[in-house]
Image 1 (cartoon, protein in one colour):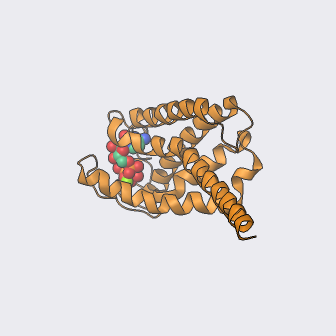
Image 2 (image 1 turned 180 degrees about the horizontal axis):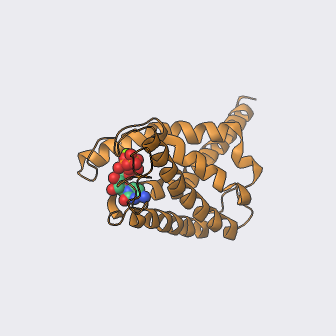
Image 3 (image 1 turned 30 degrees about the vertical axis):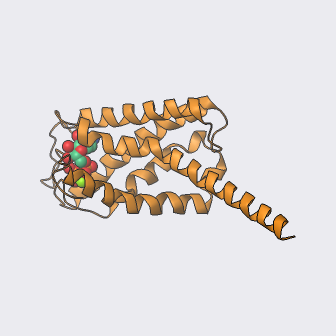
Length: 187
Ligand code: CTP
Ligand code: MG
């Protein structure tokens, strides 16, 4: 009896660990897309220096064309490699998972740019902290991936895990990036 219980518990535990691992793997493309512009960005601003009637830039100097492209490419490439190694339960096929990597990466960079648009409209300077900075990109990425995702991706537990982990990791990674000299500010 005790042996049987132990078997059931350990089987459940193993299942839970696999599911958490799968959620972490899912997050790799959007995380890579979100972080690579810090290293690979620069040059011409995405908003082409346009200033709106409120006197603020459309997006600001923190969003560059090169950074946007680098984020989309790096995230998609990472997801492409992953799709050959492990088929996540959120997608019907390797091909869908690859398309998902692109949608997640593109959604991440689009969300990041929309976040800057909102910040500028609120007269918050480029590089200043804002609560949307931490999870907004992932919310937009999750919306973008909807066309190729299984409905199970949006289980409440998964969504809470994705957002809570990101809210925790984003400040931590930015702090570390600042300490090793990659980022000007620790957020
Ligand atoms: N970056 C980039 N292109 C992008 C996004 C980011 O070149 N599309 C680079 C910029 O050098 C930017 C850095 O990554 O300064 C950090 O990104 P982020 O924190 O998103 O931008 P901020 O500088 O904080 O600007 P904002 O206030 O508009 O978010
Ligand atoms: Mg910032």
